[in-house]
Length: 231
Image 1 (cartoon, rainbow, N blue to C red):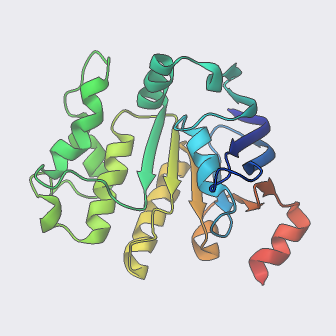
Image 2: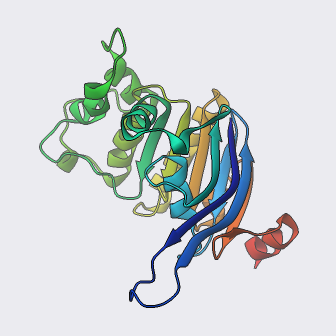
C-alpha cells in the first residue's frame, strides 16, 4: 500500500546561518494494506515529520512516496487535498474539536468537502463505531477527554478512509482513556483498516503489529530497536 524510497525532509537552520537540518534522512519503508504499524522515537527523532509526509501535510525534499503505486507527493495542491479527504483520516494529540459544535456536527465536518453520492447516516455510523451513539448532541465541554478523542477518531473515520494516521493520540489522556482509544484502534485494524501510530510510549506501541524506531531522522535497524524498546 505504502512505499517510501529514500525520503529526506530538509529544513533551513533555525538561526538562518548554519547548515540545513535533515528531519528525515533517507527513510525507506514499506507498509502493507491492513497493517498496524507504530513509529517510535524520542522528541526530535522525526516521527511527526514522517507522519506529516505520509498524510501529505508536508512534502519531502528528496525521495518518493508511493501510495498504491502512485507517487502522491508529486500531486498538485488540489489533488493532494482530495487525496487527504478521501483516502486518509487524521487523529492528533490535541482533539481539535469545534467548541460550539455538537459531537455529530464535529464528526460531519470532513463531509463538507466530500463528493460521495450519499452522506446520510455517515456521522452517526462513525460515532457508533467508537461507542458514542448516545453523545451525538453533546458539546465538547460536556465530554471527558477520552470521549473527545473518540469524537476525533470518529471524525477521522467518517469518510471511510483507507489509511488512519494517529499522532500521539493518547498523549493528553489518562491511562484508562488511553487504553480505550488503543482498543478502538486495535478493533479498527482487525476489521481491515491500515493504521500508522506515532508514539513515544512503548506500552501504546505494543498494540501495533510491528514497530519502527526512528532516531535522528533515520530508521534504527530492527536488532538495535529491540534493545532501545527494552531499555
